[in-house]
Length: 116
Image 1: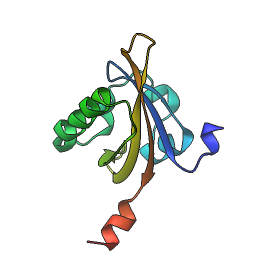
Image 2 (image 1 turned 30 degrees about the horizontal axis):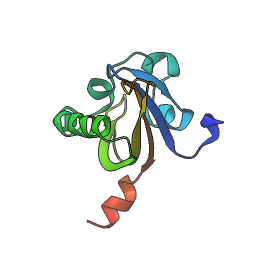
Image 3 (image 1 turned 90 degrees about the vertical axis):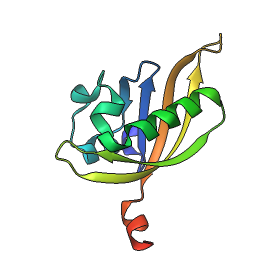
C-alpha cells in the first residue's frame, strides 16, 4: 500500500537512523531499500548546508506531538537536489518517549521554482 502512494513516506528512528522509505522516495533518491535502512537520515539524505535547519525541525517535532509542516531539501545518490514539503509527527511509546518520526512529503521543486 505504501509503495503505490504518490507521496514520499519515511520513518526515522529516535537515533536518526532510517527505518523505512516508500518506493516513491527510494526512486527519487536513487537508492534501494537495503541501502537506506539503518543509514543516518540527516547525513545521507540532507545537503550538508541544511543539516542544522533540519536538525532543528526534528527537535521541534519531538517537543510537539501535533503534525508539523516544513520545507527542506533532500539529495539523491547522484547529487540531485529536491525541495520537499513535509508533514511530520513523532510516534511515541506509551511512556511518552520518542519511538520514531513519520514524515509524509511532496516534491515542490518545480512549483517553488515557478514562483521565484
